[in-house]
Image (spheres, rainbow, N blue to C red):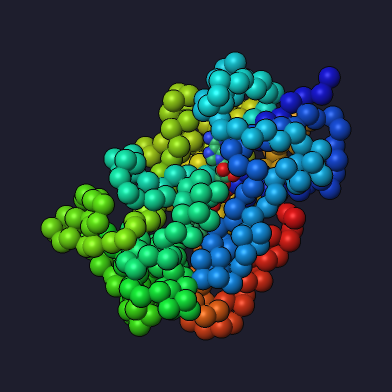
Length: 360
Ligand SMILES: Cc1cc2nc3c(=O)[nH]c(=O)nc-3n(C[C@H](O)[C@H](O)[C@H](O)COP(=O)(O)OP(=O)(O)OC[C@H]3O[C@@H](n4cnc5c(N)ncnc54)[C@H](O)[C@@H]3O)c2cc1C
């Protein structure tokens, strides 16, 4: 009898699993993908969409089509609970899906619970991005909270859009640390200068405490006016694992072994932002790692189903980041090196369009 594999979430690693199914067309496994949107939006293209370089079509992968070509049954639902011992996933609408093996690649959230009832927007899950950014970029004082790669890149992209379309006003960015705090201090300083030069107003070392309809209040008692808030303050876990009594790190991300199997369950796998590797708890919640986990996840899912031994995923020590800064220029960061030029953007454009082509 064929075994049932459930893929929960259409994150980067699961896209690779779908693609491999398309290539191999295995018949001895019954595969379902559960994801709340029929499209997967790729965050690498978000800055280009925001600025007006890419269309909506360019930023998304049609999951219904890809699943069909891969022989995978697509279920447009959101998983709410995993009954790990009973091998069942329960969706928000109460439907139950049994499995022999399940894999999670559901990404992360970004808006803290305490701000859910405020005017602050989140673009997570990623299918919310298009609508949110379309309205925000038209306003005069959009405010980004979070000075990491995503926050700074989107601030610069909205500013570029506003300039192109002569929309008055200025993008504002508040961050509790320095911008791009994971990079060396001189790289942060270079990016901060660039933000200033492009006209983005930046507050560093300021934590947002309260969000009101027309302004936010920081812990230093500054009031910063806004016409819309986009919260990009770092990855927060979905509640699903805590609710399911799965072992997690202290932030609620499921703990996985080097084989990408959950800590206490051989038949539950996971990849991307939603998991933390026990042996590498510090690696960033970023798409780079989710992409690299894809091929290992595929091999291990297949080998596990066939009773063979599994391989380990070893994360790379350093990752290359290229932030789009507007006008088809990119800010490239690798280890201690940074560069700002058109070549960097061209490289980013190539990496991102190659990624999209692979899954269309
Ligand atoms: C503006 C921006 C730019 C970025 N640029 C980069 C970049 O250039 N490089 C980089 O490495 N990282 C980048 N990141 C970070 C990157 O987006 C995330 O780290 C990455 O998307 C995580 O990938 P993932 O595979 O874990 O999940 P995601 O890509 O977030 O996908 C998760 C999937 O799971 C689905 N899902 C969610 N909840 C459920 C559920 N309960 N049940 C079923 N399905 C569910 C979602 O709909 C989605 O399909 C950027 C982030 C932002 C916001």
